[in-house]
Image 1 (cartoon, rainbow, N blue to C red):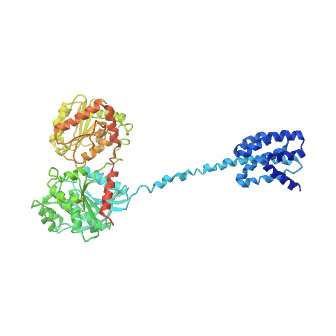
Image 2: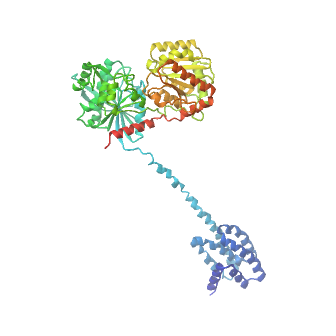
Image 3: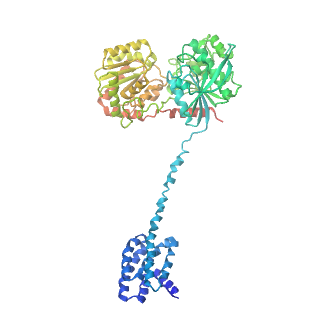
Length: 636
């Protein structure tokens, strides 16, 4: 029976604090009960309202209860009531059932149970909810993985005569290196097919893997010639080299037309035969310049009924001036192409007696691209068409332009090993000053960070506008200006710039050589870069300059017009200085305008430097446009 009584008392205790007072009155002296009960009862109410603060007030209650009346510790048990939130703990209440025990001592032992109430401070453990800080789940950014839409997969065979780092003489080598690497990142399967020149550095030759060999008839020579395939893999791109020492030996990739015509007839035909031999049939065959221009012709004639014949073809013009023109009998003999391609003026035939390899490729290719939109328009005019303007206008429906980019890993002022001082957009002003002083010291120029330094990195030929530069040097040179020339080319310009170096000691430097590391230091240390070309299909020097925060001064032609926005003093916009007509006076005017801004409004100049470094001139944009072109050409 005492158990039932205790249960009813405990139940009443939960209902109202008054019940708690009545129980002790029966067993304890009145004064003691009043003293102990008044304080705990008053504190029991707030404890019932604010569950979490109850434990903090419990310590004083326990002290007074133990001193005067252990049994009154039932009040803390009332505090356990909040644990009703965690129903299981409410079962701690049965511990009160032991209260009927006559001996208060056991009840005192029960005190540990009351101290289990602090264990109720495992409410912080409920703060294990923060442990639900499995905010790693907030790594929903991982769901960003699907974000980049790489689009459908396509396989592309690049066919060209040069590719960095194996062999390079100009911009074609940069394109053949950088574009395939970028396309691999866009869900493309890419192979690059090149001649295995004897002049390829030995460190690359040693890493090539033999993939097989076959014999192929060569034109109308009546000979079957050896074709070996050597393979090199890097950055996800497979490089296949066409091996034949009879045709690809020598210290340079290009010698003269007499030797180069047979070499590239063999190369074009062997490239397609190698794809069949490897049983790797691409969706697209992307050919570059006249050296690979016969590939689309072979594809639609001699290889039309072979597996590779189902591939679509693109021919990219990097420089229309070079076309592979020779007499018809010679090209017919080495190529073995059917007679009709030499009889039709709309195909290879040109001016009755010659065959034009590039012209034939343009006629047979499914698409034609150039390396800038403006150049695609210019080559359809008599001024820039190099006698093919009518042919190009006829095929204008399949002609488009895509500007080249530059490799951001190779051209990065933050990490460039050739620079004495690294910098980025935020530190460019101070960084470029340090690089300017180092460059002046290296070249023997007067060391002064406030001098206006103009750089020119180019082949020294008429096409690059060197006649204009040569004409205005004396007017450009003053005590505040320094000029640095780097490059080789026509003897007349090499000698002329050496003369100026002697005439303007400490202010003019002529480096008649090509030094890649020094070119990087000029891009970083110069304030402006001259590119006054007569014509420029794309141009990479102005892109490199902008990447390094060097302001370009260019003629509005081809890719220069597409990539350099002229400075507008009213809107404080633009990223360079330009002139339109091919005229020395206009070039001088553009240089003077740049000098005026540099010396009189340096803050605006610095803002232009920042805009140049922010401009996206990477291959990513260009590669995306090429990928769209491939998809448009292969809609299935």
